Image 1 (cartoon, helix red, strand yellow):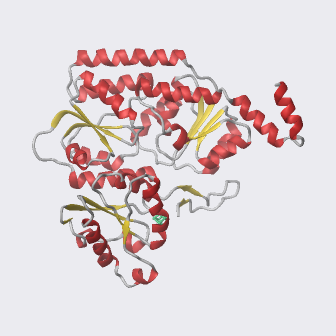
Image 2 (spheres, helix red, strand yellow):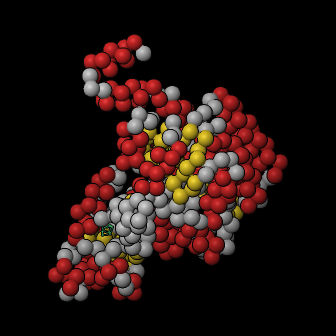
Image 3 (cartoon, helix red, strand yellow):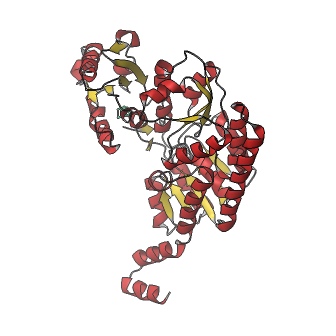
Length: 433
Ligand code: SF4
């Protein structure tokens, strides 16, 4: 089951009864199953388990989720705590098990699972309750935040001195991005970067002592609240585009108390490189940036900086003070609508209104654009799966967008071909085009 807006169509408004995001458990399981030495236990109705077991295989975690069989009969009989404890015992026997995240989901009886009734530790494994019911967590990116905050709250090492020159990079990104960021930060004097969410339990422990936190995505609210409670400074913005990367590098330097002259030197060199990339492959055209990853606003900013017109941006996450700087930046440069907790109907209305040259969006939205002969890319699989940050990521992302924009004629030919009554004529026309 996925999130469904509860309001039916009001007069004159589009229907809002369709699912708008996948089950939030996808987000939490995505990061929990990937941790080496972690064996998640799920507490929910058996019905959810069928779909969510698939996730562990889809994400290549090579481990199954363990779950008690909780059908209507067991739920009514109030056997949730006992059967969850039994599943935890089994998980603890897995070779090398050090962490058992217990994921409680939508069903009221399991969402209210009392933490004090679960063991805190079994054998060598910490047991951590992660609550991600879909009625409270409205998108899968936000569920990643909830899961990570729960783990850090339990495992983050707060003993001893802080590692003053270490930085936590927060947010799932393309694997090459943290390497590029780390290499640049080391030139400025940063001694270690820890990328979360990641595969290592030790990283979760070390992250508690970090000198600063740098969220790359704007939906890690609970994790940021935890770091604020720990009195750890938080770097605003992200290393995206020319001006965004420069400001971010300077902010890191300032919060980690690095040598200002060295930081300026590295930041300026990076800025020059980014400007050269923009000059080499400027964009033109109107692009709609839509998705459910929670990173759409940052992508829109990069495209606008490269010369594209982006009148409309939509995302599944809620508005947050962290999105405000980019939102103001975009509105000051011509973006007319930024829609949070968007629906497919919002995106379709934008497609009618703005007549874009390129669409970045979810599967159904990208399909709708292609049917109209408009180039479209699936945001998650095609865009968010390539480097994005700093000048190296900028080059990869902009190059890909430019190639797609250049294929407009092919998309239009395909539309003409399939809409033509006489496909032979269409083939002949294309041969002469
Ligand atoms: S956890 Fe909630 S949203 Fe996910 S499959 Fe189960 S009932 Fe549906």
